[in-house]
Amino acid sequence: MPLVRNMGDMVMLPTGNPIIINGAQAGSQGFGLATNPCLTPVLYQPDLPLGSRFTELTPGTIPRLYHSTANLLPDGRVLLAGSNSHYYYTYTGEYPTELAIEAFSPGYLAADNANFQPEVVKAPKTVRYGEYFEVVITVTTLVGGEVDVNLVSAPFTTHSFSQGQRLVNLAITGPEPDGTNYKIGCTSPPSGNVAPPSYYMLFVVNNGVPSEAHWIHLVA
Image (cartoon, rainbow, N blue to C red; front, side):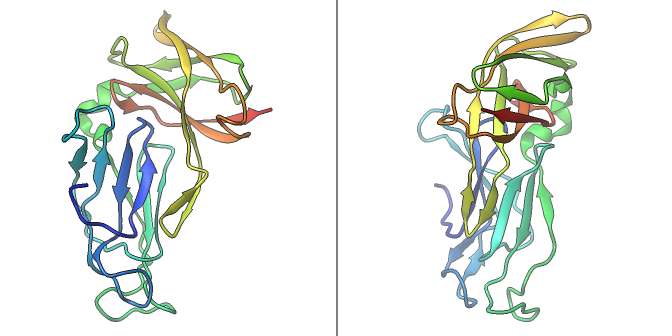
């Protein structure tokens, strides 16, 4: 990793690439022992060549140390909250209890990517294991061969551990033109071993740019 970091949070983005965010570069959790906040998020892209998989992103301004959290939002941003290294709420000292929340916007939400961002026009609300279903999208610029449909869980995160975090890349056919839109054939996960029954955020990713999530209920 390009930066020293402890107490960091790792969030799986809709693209399948994790972002590492929050934490400190010295000290340890609790009792005000952490110092030198790590304000620079890091993106990890496992498909890139060795030696170039980590990318440092735009630094934040709010220290997020012990008792901080990060979680994926349906619009593709990452919710950041918390930081309290003290026994009780403490509003004095170098790193007081932090009550402000913020949202980090990954690069795929930059204005120059707007033409690539798909919009889910139609998709089912419920699917069963191994079921074929169709998703209809609209998008200004479609990049052939660069479209994915991913199911992303809605986990909860505490103490640098995201419980239930999961991303499943679905088998798809298409996209095929459907009037002014595009139709994508999808097959849901085969069993609960791959994706336990739950509500998932369905993202369509075009050229690395995700749509806003469509909530879908995966049932046995």
